Length: 487
Image (cartoon, rainbow, N blue to C red; front, side, top):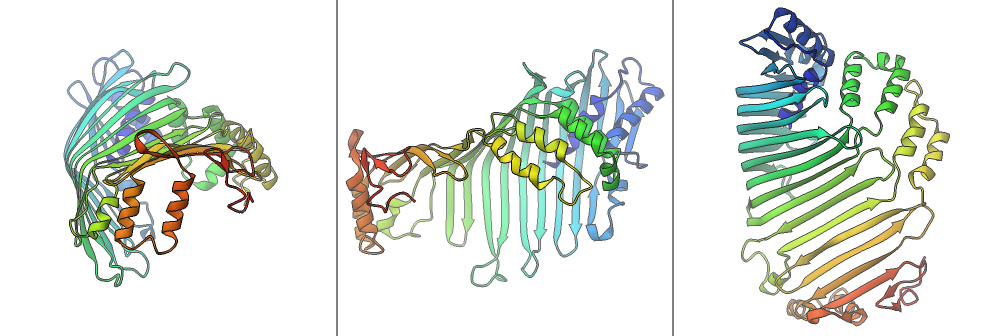
């Protein structure tokens, strides 16, 4: 969110701010101004710090920076961001913000036109210089509206309006047991509405309006082992070298900083859930009780990790959209997730970084790149897991999970488990629609049922074992010869 990006400016300020406990003074004001300029540059008018009643009043104005953007690069307008800072004298600072009617806009003629506005923005937090992070922070917003118009080349403009009645943001941070900072974050939006002008399928110029409303959107997450000094130091280093030429000239120092900061963080995990979803379309109203996305990402560490899961519950469709025989086949709940492990990012990073040459067209010698693959896959393969998930409809329930090992030059191997209830009801429904006689659906279902073994409560079970290359065991029977053998 733009708000959180701007709040980072306060964190950057305090991360390197000298202790200023005691009366607010012109000297302290000058020192804070210098610290802010370390991260935001010294363009006149961008940073303003004034002494207040026991606090330092800070005003950040991006307009002078936006004026430096070439005309062909677009036009950026960011209204001033204001907050106060109070030194507690113990290495912590109190941050406070109360702002009304704040916004920004960005325009590239003929390509994009974006305007964002908040009715109110407020926040309170305590920043710890030793952690270089907010140990606590709580903020809120109201009446957020974002209007966006994107015009792809040769296509009609695509208009979207996104609004939220209110929002809250809370975070914490503490020293990690190993290195860096561990943190938590919780972000909530209520009364969310999104209106989109969707190009027509037959005639793109004939747009259709789709309106999505959501009761609430909730995001929670954790960060582990974030190296704040390395990240803030890198920002300051780049700000001090505003041109590509300057960065290339000092690339040796850049590489030293990057190497010292590795892996920058250990892990980031987040879950976002949207509740009470309603979608109004010309075909009728669609909906869902909730939809969720779960992600996890490791840093540049030896035990690499990537995970993503998606789930939807309480799906509904407009009545009469499908024929009666098909209504029971439409899922009400569904979930699927993947996880990739078994790869190493730390060793390749340590190999690639010294070889980086910003003055070379290749950036990195191709021979070095070729040597990285064995480091990336120490066992020659990654493990791809299909996390336990499933689909539930009025007529059937399907569940699945499994794992697979896959790598270059090798045949994937793995195991999976699939269960299903309601197969007979599905076949009966397809018969009613006349589909089992078409496209081989009937024979395929009959073959699948023949491969299954009985499970609990009348379920059909397919236990798949392909751990030995060239075989495909389903409930103990090898079907590889029937399917043409392994390739």
